[in-house]
Length: 358
Image 1: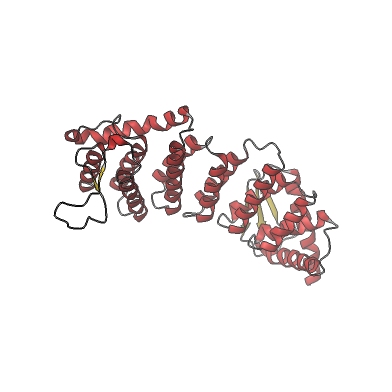
Image 2 (image 1 turned 120 degrees about the vertical axis):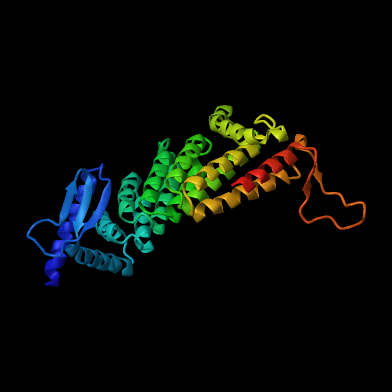
């Protein structure tokens, strides 16, 4: 009986391999809960969406796993690359959490027996089934590095990868692995994707107010943006596009604090970013009550505002920090104070008042 199932498993694996080879538009994979065995193929394809009946899953996986581990134990070379690829596709499609099998696919790519672009497509389909698989993202990262080093055409490589990460994060909330991989992709595509990701992350956090990982990505994005501005080598057009909405939010924030004589022009560029973020965060807290992720992000905002106002390297027009010892000889405070007659002082008072209001 087992031999009959193994014979059927080999045929199903071959059909899966041919399906991926002939249809580059396959976009998703699922397992259908079908217990009863019928005399027909358990593979279903509808509008480039792939599904496999559940009754055949253990037989396919056991057959593929057994043959692959036997190959690994004898330490033989990958002589029959097509058969090895077929077995690996079946095993990884059903269980992508096996690092050994991903390493075997790396061997196939290095030896030139497997197209890395084929595996980018193959793994993107698996991500629709297992969107939180760490080994999957590690393998895709390896492929991307391999393609960059091989000097192939990779203009849209990281842009497509960012879209795949967003789709995976949409399928599984708080998808740490997807967002971490997206952060890495962002570092590889800076500064070209900075403005686009700034707008995309804002839309994301507005739709997913409980997604801690999404807010962490936005915090990383802000950090990259500040570093980009501090480098003094930034593209003026990119910054203008970002600040178009930032200046508007800054003016709205300062409108309620006219007594401090502040305008968007007197506030440094780096602080404008956090004023904008504070305004966005406050709107979300008002509209979506009781979400801890929003308050954790708010803590990050105030921490960074305080760090900027107390930065010893801040611009002179902020005003100097009052770090001198008092005249009566008492020891100075651990946290330096902001000068009384400075832009930094005015901003600090406005932000503090804003915190009390909300």
